[in-house]
Image (cartoon, rainbow, N blue to C red; front, side):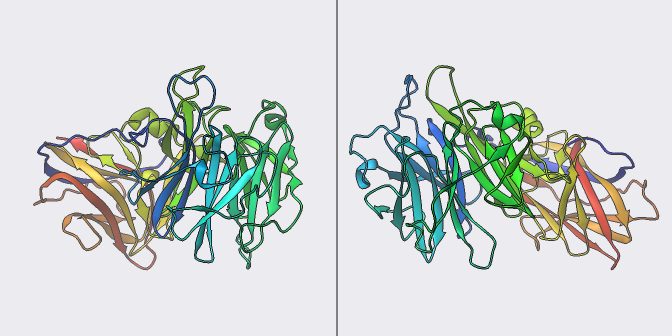
Length: 439
């Protein structure tokens, strides 16, 4: 994201790259469906599911939400509308306009959809598939009053499930669920949040999200978050999750991991004064100090492109924007200094999916932060055993050498690009970014 000292420049040769036809469609907002609000992402069986609210009309000045929508994707690009969940299928009134925020969870071979009936309470529906059809499990609220559920499954030996819900007018509450996922195992407990960010938040502040990273629980709301070593709290306020792109107090959203990458999805109102929203995604990072960093620098440069696809004409492709990577590779950095991928060893690889090559010639540039040992980078097309487009020697004894590769194969249109690394037993590099310089 930002430059570093002592970088190592390694160059390869000319790519004859040609592209015939085709347009990169805008990926933010993430769907062509408008009114997608309160987005919660869950990954089930290697598929991403978006459980969202649905604002009914762009001219509504109050919240008119008559159903919930479920979308699915396997590549972050093609979001298919796979289900509409109606309040007529649960205990809510058939003509309800109060289908507020929702979430989903999985357990015991079943899938559970938790929904808000405005602020009256939270109900639960059950299905055999992430997309339903869902049926009402209780025919009454699971908890009441209050709203905006987040489901969290802890990493203890019992994989204990929790429900977090509520707003600042009362409190955020946490309650342990039983293994059946449709009954509570204890009395809901208010969560104490310490710090100015929560103290100064509007009284109505709702729509929490909770996840765990390493030893800390992260509780977010709007554009702020707090952390604790105990799921019940107390939580200490930290900072904003990001700035820009309407990442403010109305930014209802969630975070998710996909193929070793971390993402942030949130919604915002299209017009001030009107209750009609759309949702966007960006890459997200947790820095070496444990701070959440939503990558709005990526959005500044590539908002319409969105995540999960790349363009060879970009000035830089930051290493941390990867689509997929070897599990041992680490994303490191600090909020104000940028990020890189470290601990890249022999046999490791990084995937950048759907790379678009236009009708231009390029010189490939790879920028590293550090090198140990000797090895080389193979640039492969399509998959890990795909055609080798070029090979760059990497040598800690000759850090500034410019490597020229000859007899490169031409590329056309879109392809997955894999950077694969081979080397000695002590081989270890840190990747900052790469790019394709126009010849």
